[in-house]
Image (cartoon, rainbow, N blue to C red):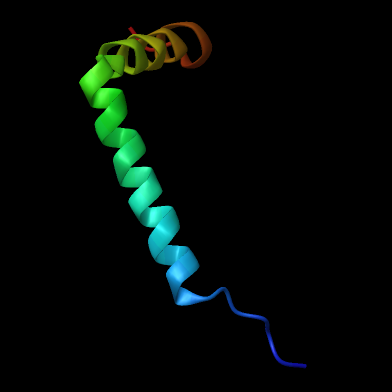
Length: 49
């Protein structure tokens, strides 16, 4: 049985959408929020620090 493949243009569209979303998040200043959440996860759940 042949495996069904995703068309190449769908892959490119998803990559472009991801890059645009990252740029938009950086523009809005979301990097600080994401970093703070990552630090809190490390401090609370994993027990680092």
